[in-house]
Length: 333
Length: 216
Image (cartoon, rainbow over all chains, first blue to last red):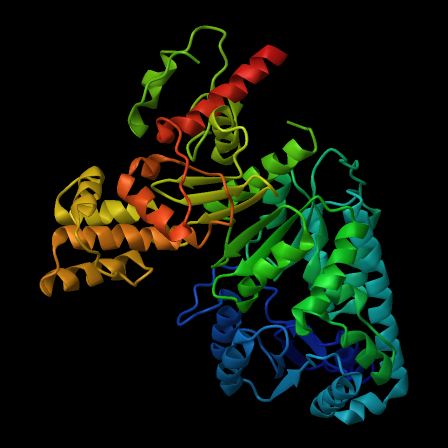
């Protein structure tokens, strides 16, 4: 692959977190099939969850230009298993990836090896390419952690930061260009820290509304933690063994008790005043709401989203009310 | 706060005529930004202030509105709302009342007269109406169906209510004795209802405005 003759790498769609290190290392471009949805007005038919139904429909219409699809079918999202099988009919090749519920690194290593094989072992054998790819992803993630910290400290625009942080699942198909983007936000004008605002954590699946973080800001809430994007950032590795060790701690795929312990630590570290639990309409994660409320011991607002677009009025109202409630506790009202 | 007047939603301009020059106007509710105001707060905060006026030791506020149902747990500041469908709101009863050709108050009176209750299992208000029609076709009494509808709504609302001793019911639906009866039975708890529960949020907004005036 040299100069003008260089072919564009094949594109693999991922339905949830799949180690981008491994995908780039194998010479593929990952594209998270969820990330286009909030910016769209997708109205999928026969849906339970609008996230999975939207990418399923887009794939069936051939709109995402995928050469292959990796469906995260074990751990994380349960609807993906069904919608992934439906979508698989229109993709040249599909692989089903399973995270271990019990965090067994040996099992995950086997899954990663199977994924490598699916993506083509030959490419992985190119050691130099693989090393460079891993370095690029690691460099971008290190910068992402800086952005996450800046946002937590109120020194980066939450909406802009979120849009980048959520894209760490695929690094927008180009780790180098993506790293530049992150760097430009970090180098941009620093916001003044707003210590009087209630500090909130956004846990659960990412909101399907494109302006959600702006609406939070308008409601006087400072989002200092986005659960899922932080998972994308904090996990990594430079070989199969270290990737297996790291990604076996992916909290969304583990028992809720494991996730709760992780969340408790993060909320404490980030001095979180309140929690927004976002769940998608019909999402099984909504069933965890009671356990989250019981254990996290902070004011909590549960928001249930449905179709993509702008944040609907009822949800805005909830966020504003939550802002007022928390501001009251901080003595700002 | 001595003067108050209840008007229909579209007649809000007439309320502004009550305001003396220099007095702040505080708005609350879904349309709060449409009405000229000096101060504005969500109905959730307004409910907290209004309820505290009557019950300073309230634990949970149950705001039973026509468009949504809000449950505010004052002990840990958690908020739950039901609005994904009309099954947990006053609109559910409005729809049923229209079918029977009575007012919502009339529907409540029918339920009060019931000797028994028809089970309505659907949580969807449209399907519940199908169940209601089917029960009537099978010979169930109108009053018994009305009682079943109140119970179905109460069951749906009760799912949102946490365990608490002092639960305060406000909002228009809190005036409905059949609803309170059904809710109390399901929750196994007597609900506390302030006078004119549908105006408690407006009172809360007035308290907020008064507090703001005294500060400035």
